Image 1: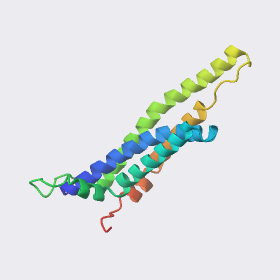
Image 2 (image 1 turned 135 degrees about the vertical axis):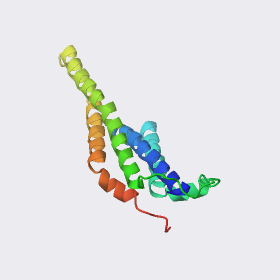
Image 3 (image 1 turned 120 degrees about the vertical axis):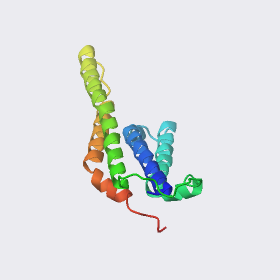
Image 4 (image 1 turned 45 degrees about the vertical axis):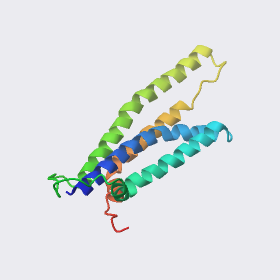
Length: 166
């Protein structure tokens, strides 16, 4: 593995970790956008989604361009790194870790939100309507993490292709 290939894999792994965080926050931005009618928070949410999506596209789809422009692979004495794992194994491991982090973070949150919903419903005796927005958001995050985990081979095949012929 050359230093350039190594840094491409590192950038993709960092991109997958960022993707996990983005998937963790995306339902909140979408709920805010659809529940408020073009207020400042909904527009800022759209800007955040657009900028993060563009950054993730560069990191996951064009890491070779970033490595070349940033010049991180220059200045290494050796031309080859002796790492016996192919890049797909690194990406697969990163997807497992990313989806596990989202699941470990979100499953307890879901149980807290469900508990809070029923607790508020019982305490107010139906006089006040409890907030339901956190429960679907939490469920969406869990579903996205499970999809990321279950479809990791497909994701690896999509982002792991050699795109150096640009």
